[in-house]
Image (cartoon, rainbow, N blue to C red; front, side):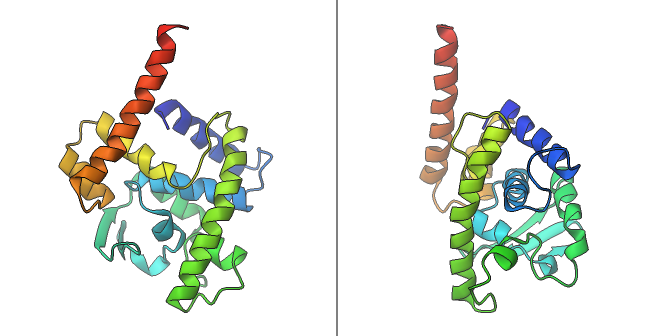
Length: 202
């Protein structure tokens, strides 16, 4: 997503949070939107880690967690827009385990005390949230098939635009090889060229 599209999503989130949008503030589309933006703000944090983020992993303005996909340890500063999202859910603390309510509220058939059960719940919710994000994109006036994974690409694009080095972006996204990061950025550049190409003849 480009900056303008992210701003459209942020504006929709503000409308939802204030009860002025057609999406309920505590409905799944709203939770999906907040989780998506949280991922963008937190250096492309993976959906599996966002949706299973626990209150115990947040300490002194930082998130310290083990990535579910790679097992790597991460220690990230919570930047102000991400902090606002965490604050929205602060009334869930300390009774609830997870910051975002998706896996607890919408995947009750899974045993969340078991790692395999939690993995299945995360996957189930990823599919459901991706469906809801299509409606969110429409509500924000964005003509794109929005998904949780696009948050990582969007974050990578922001880093590239801010002049981060390839190695810094690789470290932020926790890619095992630089070629994976290059692939991410190549797709970003291709999309930018598409937009500029269209502008040539409009």
